[in-house]
Length: 63
Ligand SMILES: [Zn+2]
Ligand SMILES: [Zn+2]
Image (tube, rainbow, N blue to C red; front, side, top):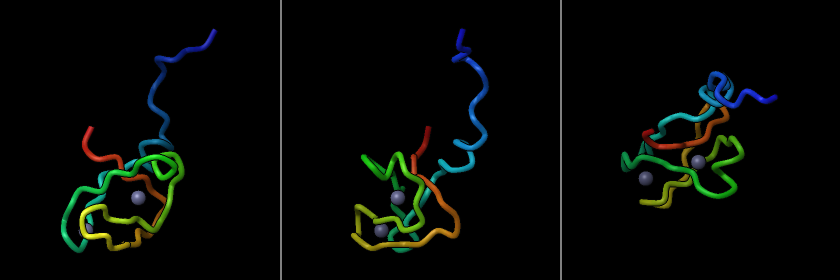
């Protein structure tokens, strides 16, 4: 029997965060492949600039 209701994986919480583009301040939400694989270089969909985050993360927006 699998307990699907068990607590949120701590790893997920640590990796998935709210990211804002340092250049234009737009909330960065990763999609597709990027939403599955934590990464350091994020491409802003608004200003098309890349920004670097010191640890591996996935931008999920507000939830
Ligand atoms: Zn931007
Ligand atoms: Zn990203």
